[in-house]
Image 1: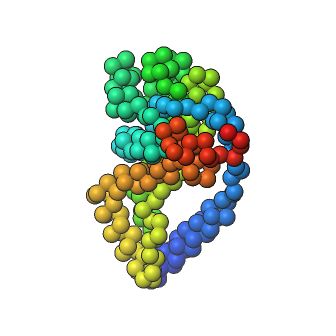
Image 2 (image 1 turned 135 degrees about the horizontal axis):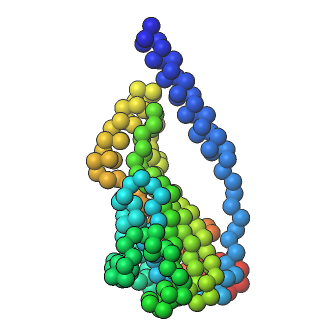
Image 3 (image 1 turned 90 degrees about the vertical axis):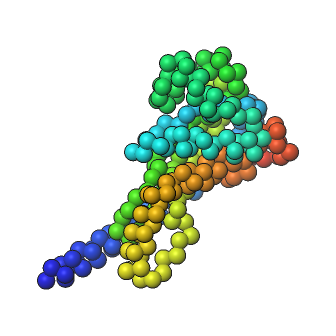
Length: 230
């Protein structure tokens, strides 16, 4: 009797999970093309990355993400202020957490660093989760690029990356359960969220992506992209 009751409850949970997944998928909407008018008028050459705000329960999220955002921005053609130097500068001035750092006035950032633009990042999700039939490391982040000279928002973006992408779901129900448990153990013990944060950073900040950041002046593709005239 107990075994039958367990199977019934498990089946209901599996159905609920499937319905939820279908609902989430069905709620996806096509984004409107980004208006690059302000971005093209500004044409920043240097970017100051503010340590990300962490809205996840994992305390490692901020600096995991921060350590990986320089590469896609540099490859896009921008000069990026060394993130460790920026973080230390804030700390030397009495600002010891990202929340305080994100509150510094734009004019003050321009005065101290001399950057053309500041990039603000908010981490919505970071870490490994386990639910009935799946286990994954997922990172989701939003970003906003602001001109420090005019204080105008130039661009906003969002990206997600997951270790479950492309994962084979074969093997039936038992196979899914075993795979989920093994994935959770492996990903939690090896901090799989860190490389996933690298994938999310690339998707978020690499130039040439749909609605993504424009190429900077150090790129041979400078002024070749965007949906408005240069």
